[in-house]
Length: 253
Length: 265
Image (cartoon, rainbow over all chains, first blue to last red; front, side):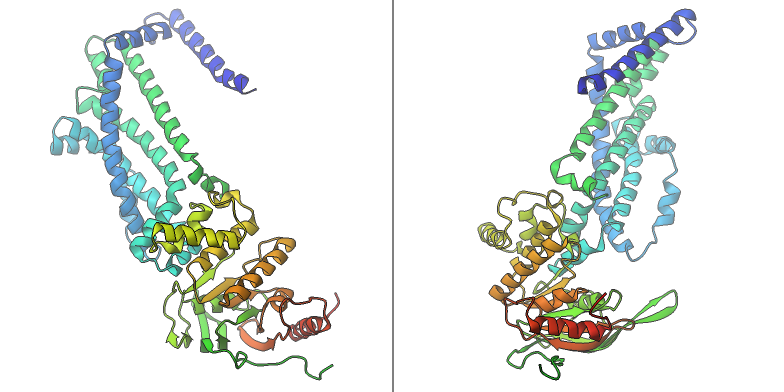
């Protein structure tokens, strides 16, 4: 039963690949390289060790930008969320900055950090920080009062309350925020690498086009980006299902 | 049969020392510019080691009174004193037991029960935790998470978490309200057993007349809007109580008619 359910998506992908190949052979040289040529492009990249090297470069930037955003946004969000249970002053500013695409920060990133890893890391940080901060604040505000009261009853001060009550209480919701944010980071890194650096999967795509219109390599790069993104998402989803976090789903009724 | 089967008194039996006292406590909430009197002039004294039930219909302010006594908010008028000290904040010497909702879902049974014991050494903490796990009959569930437990078991965890810090006073806010009636009976028995063993002062909020008469030394009957103390009934039946004895029925029926309910539906 399980095997058959896993079979359907595979079958569907095969059908799509066939349709793609068919369309390309009906209009040769007009649309895209076909799946076969794309596969050859992937093999070509792999042969030169570029898939691993560029994926590692991209993941390196994502890790740093994401990590910095997480370690700053979580404590800050806990503090703001806790004091905002009584008062909300910050909201308008957050709401104005939020719709600004992280890509709009590219000129500023280059101005501050020059062309290099730091600019890319900064852009990823910008892309992750605000959504994460807002997710933490909202999560803190929805922590049931009964947990906070129980914590106060056991003599916890504000810092202990944040560490021992608010933080664990928001973790399940936070995991969802982290998963979405990591997705954003993966989107931003490609764009950042197209402009700010000369390695990574985003760089691969512009470079393949600039260095002789190698659209097979462009598509190969896109496939790799998709697969790595999927793996990242799967990884965080697996964390979300860890036993100590499962209550977040059970209690949502 | 005595002429007045109900002994009325706002003070505990004289042999007990006063543990807790509310002095002219009133509570007014303001919502949308309208003020609403929730509690009016509550004067109550609870003795050390006494088991007192606050009984009344929903909305009579009994939970509000309990929260104020526990220090979660300040009464609009009046003062609450425990051991002679004015209550300003919640305090680990007096633990509030919410319905099973108060159990921390991110901690195991062990983690919950040991929650208030962070200051103890690891071995002392483990010892205390296992003592209370045994007392509430949760052996074998030490590593379970609350969502893996039944409602009654979660309630046991919360009671054990409260007892573990060795408080002098327990506040219980309709602790068994969400349980099925059989589990509720079992839990009452267990609470009584623990109370008889540890002699904490217990203030217990309920809307269930039988529950109040089965458990309490005194039942404080409250009327609604604004919440006032209508009557205090001394339950002079020793534990274990025979809940079909004439005296039990007499006291229960007295409270029923006091609240204005007939004895037959």
